[in-house]
Each structure stands twice: as C-alpha cells, then as structure tokens.
Length: 428
Image (cartoon, rainbow, N blue to C red; front, side):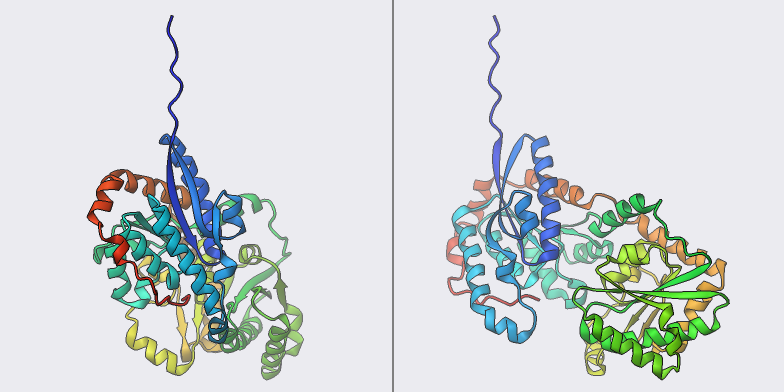
C-alpha cells in the first residue's frame, strides 16, 4: 500500500510595499494581486505589508502606515504636518530593520521612497522601484541612486528603460496601467458611442492645477471660438473638470474669455463636465487641446488627434530650459521618440496657432488619419497587463539573486549604516 505524502507547505515570502499617495495605492493594489498569483504559481506564499490606502488594504496589505499619514499639499501644509510624516517614515524604517523583508517594493513617491530604498538595500532586501522618479527631468543623480540601491526598476514609460539602462540601472519597461484601463474602457464602451447627429465634438483639457489652468484655459477657449467661427459645420466643445479644480473658477474664466472675444453666444457650445473621467469625456471627440501631463498620454492612447499646450511662469520656463535637456515636453512625443503631436509652449500657445492646427485636422481626413496612424503605432509599444508583467519581472529578479543570507553577509554592517536621526525629505 502506498502512503501519500502530505503536500509540503508553501514557503512564505515577506514583501514590503510602500506607496505614499492615492495613485500609488491604486497601482500597489494591482501589483499585490498580480504578485500573489505569480508567487502561487511558483509554489510560494506572500505576506504583503507596508504603506498603502484602502485599495491596497482590500488587496490584503498589512498596513503599518496609511497613505493619509503621508499626505501633504502646499509648502505651508507640509511644514504643519511634518512631524506626522516624519513619524510615519521612522515607523517604516524601523519595520524594515526589524522584519527584514525578502523583497521591498517602492511605488512612486520619491520624497520618501528614495531614502527607504537605500535603507532596504543595505539590509539585504531585494529592492524594486516600481514607477520610478522622473530621472529624465531631474538629472542623473537619481539615476545613480537607483543604480546603486536597487536590483530592479519597473518602468511604465518606454523611454525610461533606455535612459536608466544607459545609467547602469537594471530597468524593465512593463507597460502602463493607464493603457490597460483604456483598452478595457474601449471594449466596454464600444456599443455606447454618443449620437452627435452631425455635430463635431472637440475636447478642451486645461489640466488639474490651478496655476496652469489660469494660464492655459482662457487661451484654449479663445482657440475654440476662432475654430468654431471658421469650421464648416457645427462644432461643440467639452471640458472635463478635474476633482481638484473649482467649477465656479472655470465658469469665471470661461465668461471672461468669451467676453474678450465678443462671443458670449458661444457659451451654449461649451459643456463643462464634472465628475467624469477623461476617457468617457473624450471618447467621442475628433480633436483635443490638452495641457501637457498625463492627460496628454491618455488622450494619445485613446488615439484622438490632439495638440499639447503648456504655459508656465516666464522665470520658471527660463530656469527649466537651462536645467532640463529634453527634446520634447509631452509624454506622447517622449514615448514615441519623435514629434507625433505638436507642442505649443509659452508664446507659441496662441489662439491663432492652436486654432490653425485644429482646423488642419478637422478639415482634412488625410491629416486626421495620419495622426491617428502615428498614435496607433505609439499605442502598440505599450504591452498589456502591466501589473502582471511587473510581478513576473520582480519574481524573476528575486529568484536570480544570491540567497538571503549571502546578501545579508555582503551587507553585514547594515544596521550600523542606517541613520538613527534621518533627515527625512518631503514628498516631491
């Protein structure tokens, strides 16, 4: 008689994940689910703990620090809540030292995570930075710190991988969660296209920060007025309002811009849309003016012809020109490594130029299809299921490293290297 042997218990891996804001919480939750599946396939169990919010908690995170403890906005607020942030940071540092996780995953939020990254690395943990800081905008110093204190960096922008690899970082482009969301959205909304009955709709995306809206939004309204006057057909504009933006302030800016153009009657052609995500607002648009930022990449991945607009304080712009050496400002062109959408900056962001480009797309099917084709090619560069791709890369990295004991022997003075009185940086 053969006696069956009981299945061996799965080995448990301690994984510390640290997110510091809502966007990191969302990406951390996706990563926890994907990691758990990948670990199970490898015969491993995962105990996830660290810093997160309600989404990571729902995914199974043992939460030592809630992201609300790390939240701060303006400089004055940061000063007032600094003791709270510092206390949370020290608790995470102590937990790293006591628990010695096999894997530590830092998610965005460089003001805190770049420091915890160094501590975790010196403790012998397999350190992974998921959604790294913008080394392409902040110079080489951060790239060097990533090189010296991580085993893997998982990027969500294709050009980041190339830049980081040139700096000696083990970087992997895993795709972008935004593209995953868009693909799902387009599949579910394919049968829900809005019937516009011969009306052409354009998008006006003025950004989510009050300062950029003050500089950009009036120009975009004036651009629409000029386009509306010259377009051979009925034209409507839709404006998504970010939840960080005051609708009443947008109404004021809108009325003022229309008055300056003597076009108050066009108010009925402009719809301000509150509490709606950008995808649902733009899905029926034939063209969009977009303030530079993540919204520009989202519009591009929706394959909507567009132009990128940005204005900043003249002094900030002059300083930025001297310290940031990038060929483009939009994520769209940076990801494509060529100009596929025009960028209108500072004085070039005029109603005349913005309207001229919009009309070149709206009045020419050839121009529209050419830009759509370029955007479609860009979209194909983003692999699907970014969280699962990241999880697989993380598990592969962990498997290929020396044993935990060997790594900790290499960093035998780790506890001495940790600074008891950390000069904790503030969120950036």
